Length: 132
Image (tube, rainbow, N blue to C red):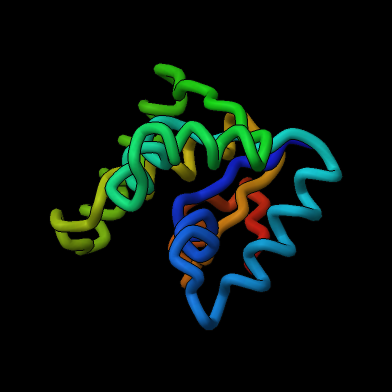
């Protein structure tokens, strides 16, 4: 089982979010036991400000998270969903990485670990989302 990890779950652990650190840690641990954890470039970029380069490498190693690059197919899927979002009246200020992370997970993993307020499930209906 391949589980893509969203930055929201990693930041819960890194920043010891009082509401989510325990649940996010438990979810990461469970999914690590069930298979491979992966992250794309957008996740690495989003968590990098919270860490030094050495700490980022350590975090990925500690959780056995493998970096898996996005593909052209996932970039196209992200762009198609972003276009649909804009057509539905979404703000152009919406961060495009959310669409990239969802598309990467849908095409290159079996599920995504993320705190989702309905956005991922709305645009990525084929994606299984596990929330802490």
